[in-house]
Image (cartoon, rainbow, N blue to C red; front, side, top):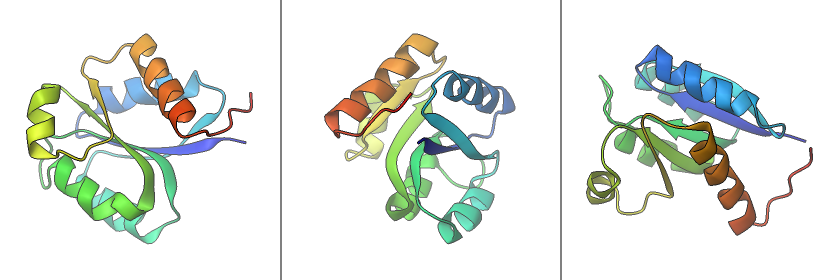
Length: 126
């Protein structure tokens, strides 16, 4: 069993880093990546529900916080992966679930995923 993930970031190196981190965790799988938030909205919005949605905040075309609101029903968890300060993110979206500050370390990434899994009593099958 695995949990599917989508990544939306306008910087390819950020997508690549998250893709690598997800690949290191046995129960996660990348189902889609987007460097354009409008494309993400159109494709994720019409597809099946995903488990983890990783969003940058500052993107051309649409802010990650706006995209999050539009895709809220399509993702079990929304995780902002941003260079914005967490406090700034909280003022933009006070209801956000999780935040990873860029640059993201593997340790912080893995701890965040483990915490979300435990808090929500989700099974981890390795």
